[in-house]
Image 1 (cartoon, rainbow, N blue to C red):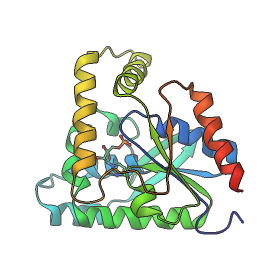
Image 2: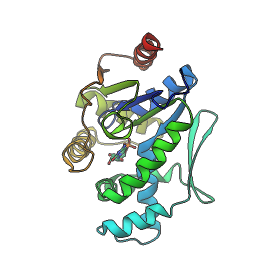
Image 3: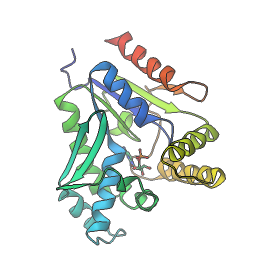
Image 4: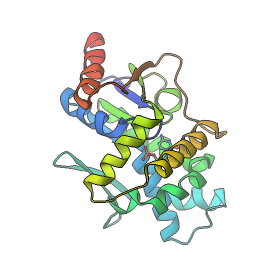
Length: 225
Ligand code: C5P
């Protein structure tokens, strides 16, 4: 059963809902591959800036994205992102990249290319894929669709805790405003906006621990497997 193209756990949701950390753990528990599509948009943004591409020119962004030698790999349970020989795993998480992604994320040609790569990945093996348009656009026939959510306050608190783990102090009020602004952009863009697919199961993790969130998704998958 696991060899069918629909053996996809599609996880969508707003910034900081825990999609990546929960998704990765769900994939490990199920023995599925894990695909972080946000990392692909981040890598494309880094690559465009690195090449001096005009971020306001969708055709130029499409062309440069199509030429990006992107490699995603798993190293001891950690995603490594490389473009050519350069490891950009850390740099794509910087605020500079995060601020500029919206310039690429609504360029139709950029999305078309990355969506093709995502579908090819999902067709090769059972996959947990997280992003904004997994259930609605990329894998509309996914066997499992989850919309992972949590209150804005809780998402900001979790993000701040992640920064603190890296030794970075952030202003919680400012972080909350930034998250709200990114959500607004993700939800209102004309192309592939963040939305709950009609057949997605909503999982609000505001009151859940990390392990409880993982368990809830693993249980959902096993109900159907
Ligand atoms: O998930 P992450 O926060 O790393 O995603 C970064 C950004 O990439 C999102 O805010 C959105 O602009 C874009 N993105 C997207 N479609 C996806 C995944 C991410 O547009 N499937």
